[in-house]
Amino acid sequence: MVRHERFVAVAFSLLMVMSVSAAAQAPPVLPRIMLRTLMTAVNLTDDQRSTIAAIVADHKEAIQSARSAQDPIALRTTMREVMQQVINVLTPEQREAAKTAVKDALATERPVAK
Image 1 (tube, rainbow, N blue to C red):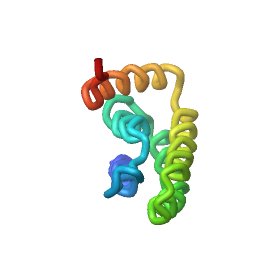
Image 2: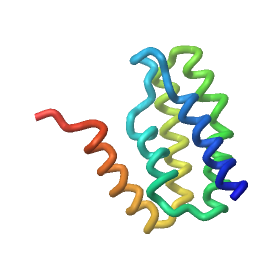
Image 3: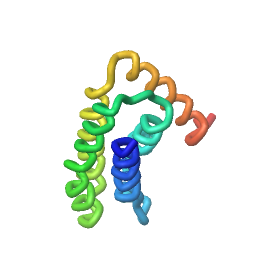
Image 4: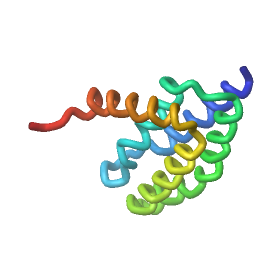
């Protein structure tokens, strides 16, 4: 239970770091939705949670630096690195479940313009 609370706290802090005041600094929508979806829709083991929390913690400084430098390219690059490492932690079944859940989340949060 403590690991889960720590994971949620670290993931929440990453989401807070990712929140940006200026639109030009905003991180890509997909990593934000993916992280939120992983926390709720995919059944992660305690080991996976701790690994993901470590990945997030390792990149926290780089994300903050990119935000303070107002460098959206560096922020996007760092977030892609984070997401690739997080995806590598998942099993193939979890990846498929996450993919489906993210598609559903994107459909509701970012409707496609016709």
